[in-house]
Structure formats: structure tokens, C-alpha cells
Length: 240
Image (cartoon, rainbow, N blue to C red; front, side, top):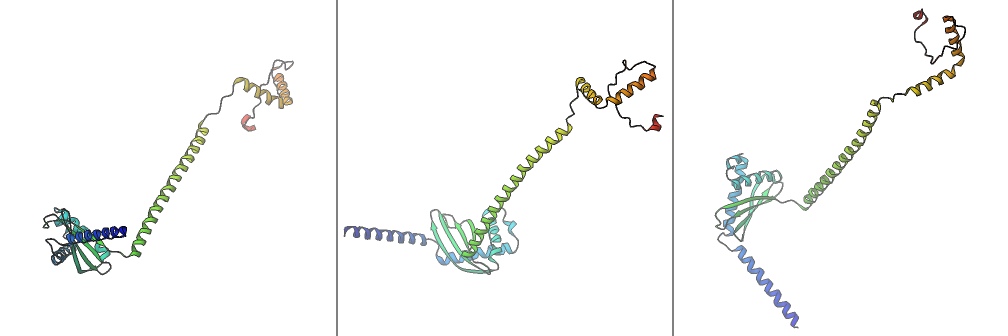
């Protein structure tokens, strides 16, 4: 029984605190009617500036300039501006927030107007377009697909670049092999190659040696040594 009484008392205290906080948030120097009138005037002024393409005239005032840019960007989703349907004011530490409900042909929106602690100077203007749950899910899905697609494209490009590096290294190796000069043969190797060539044509060597000996008038071919035989590319007429 005691536990139930304690629980009931705690719930009662929480409800009272919430009610007090709500009263403090609503009650203040600006009434709901004044919030509606002031909010409607500010939104209409924003729309007039953007429609008249006079945004650059407020470049020296960051609050008005950024507020006009935000309203201009939101109009692409709002469509045709159809007026204000209501407004509310919420007080917080160091100022107040006037929330104006805007009607549009495509989407509705809420314009938040921030006031300083004196409730006379605007410190910020933000336009928030109200999207349906389906539109929010579609945008989230598109953003996810775009992000994942970008990551995959970057990974594919990186893999292609890496494969190009391996191909370039192979081409460089082939080019170096082509440019390297053939190793020069030593005299010993050349003599061995000449002897191998002559060993295949012993009869031809003997005939050539005999012909040279006959031309020189020698009795034998002992003094003649044929080291190599080369084919002449000249025709018979050229030799003549």
C-alpha cells in the first residue's frame, strides 16, 4: 500500500511540473495573436523580397539575407505561396521562438523566427518544408544509393589505377629488354663458332684451299688455312 501511495505521489509531482513548464513556455510578453500578426507580416515581407528579386539589397543584414535565401530555396518545394494558417510562440532562456505555419500549393512549411531576450530584435529566420513520410523515405533511400554508388565507383577507379600500374611496369620491362645490346662474343667463342661452321663443310674447305694453292702456284695446301666461309650477296655480273 505504501509503495502505491509513493508511486501516485511521484506521478502527481511530475504532472504538476510539466504543467508549470508548459505555462511558462506559453505565457509571456507576446500573445498568440501578436505572434500570428508579426509572423504573418515577416513571412509576407520575405516573400515580397524574394519575388521582387531584391535579396541582394539585404546583403549587409546577415539575418534578413540568410532568411530570404532560405525562403527562396524552400519555395522550390512549397510551390505557390498561399498564405499563413496559424502561428505559435514558445519562450526559452534568452529569447522566444515564433513558429508560423505556411500553406503552399505543393508542400506546407514552418517558418521559425528567433527573437532575442528583449523580444524586439530578430536573431534568425529558418524555413522548414514539411514532407510526407513517403517522401522522406524516398529521399533517404536516394541519398543512401548515391552514397553507396559513389563509394563503389571510387573503389572501381582505384582498382583500375592499380591494374594500370602493373601493366606499365610490364611494358617498361619489355622496353628495357629491347634496348639492352646483345652481349659481345669473345674471340674464343668466335673461333669455336668458325670451327663449327667449317666442320660442316670440310669438302668445300678442301676444294677452296686447293683452288687457292693452284692460283698461288703452291705444290700443296699445307700453308693455307680456311677459317670461315661467308656467302656473298653479289650477283655473278657484279663479281665479274
